[in-house]
Amino acid sequence: MKRLAADSMLFRSRGSIDSGKVSFIELFFDLIFVFAVTQLSHSFLKNFTLEGAIHLGILTMAIWWVWIFTAWVLNWLNPETKRVRFMLIALMLVGLIMSSSLPEAFEETGIYFACAYTLFQVGRTAYTVWVLRHGSTELRINFIRIFSWLAFSGIFWVTGGIAHEENRLALWCIALLIEYLSPSMGFWTPKLGKTPTTVWDVEGSHMAERCGLFIIIALGESILVTGATFAELEWDMLTLGSFAAAFVSTVTMWWIYFNMTSKTGHHFISHSEDPGRVARSAYTYTHLLLVAGIILSAVADELVLAHPTGHIELKTALVIMAGPALYLLGNMLFMRIAAGVVSASYTVGIIVLVALFLLYSIIPPLFLSVLATLTLVGVAVWGSIFTNRLCQAPLPVQHKNGTR
Image (cartoon, rainbow, N blue to C red; front, side, top):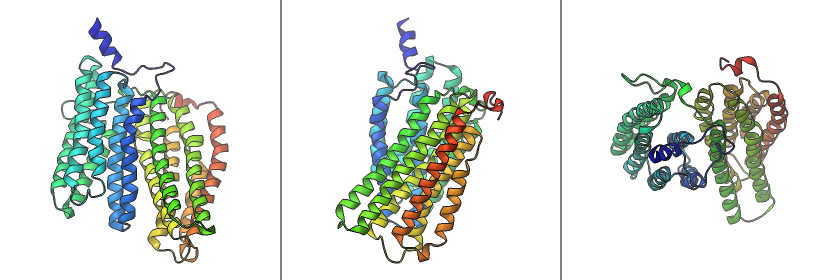
């Protein structure tokens, strides 16, 4: 009886008031990814080239993937138990090595990043399979399938870490392709088949809060970059203007996500009969675009603070506009998946940003940044009205039965 009680404690409760609550150990665990996001943005600033942008994309995808897979695990397992806490602390150690190796991941520290990443993914999944040995058979088989996919991709990660730099990119792209395809294929494995999304009994409020906290991590990096850069510059009207534009941009991104996107997602996933399908597509995939957009915006803020006037280079203009555009695209796709609607505010915002980018050669950096920020403000105001109406309206029948 004691063993059964201990095993039952390993799993997160469902449907209770506290079932969606994020624990302190989860917040402590997230500190590793605060460091990782900082490493990503600073590395791109040091290698502000097309090659650097490609490296940023690959590494951002990897960092997001390792975090979201852990968030899924903690949606089932109870982080307040000792076994799960010890797992998270061990993952933090591995994650610190992984994050520390990010700046030189495509150079000297590639093998350290690859080994740490693979150990993080495979080790966490193997431990979860072991923990589930007395739990749900379907869920345990699901993690055996996940283990198979991650072990397979791990071969390409480690091989890429050993390979020369020109081959590393190709091998790591293959590894990411394998991992990003796996959820959409239900982690199909020979003889074991694939996992239906109904097995992914998601605690929607927990998943929504966890992903929201990662957005806070990314926005926090934007605040840190803005504050640190501003503190080192001479304070004049141009610097103060750049600082204000960067701050308003970050606040508006927060508003768009938490007052519009997150609110809608939480409302619809909690009323879905197949929350696993919604969480797989809406949270697992689209939030990568949000994180990438915030990181690029943080880079743009530092560039504008350092050089608010003068001729603007194509790559700088691209980053200034790409950050907000990616962010709006991610929010738009999330709303489409979670609620089955496309908000016109996001679409118009993206179109405006593209149009402004085409005029970059005649607009100073600070003015271009201000226009991008004003576009986000417009989306926030317009979209908030739409979101309030959407969440107050009765859910359509097709969403209730999960056949949308």
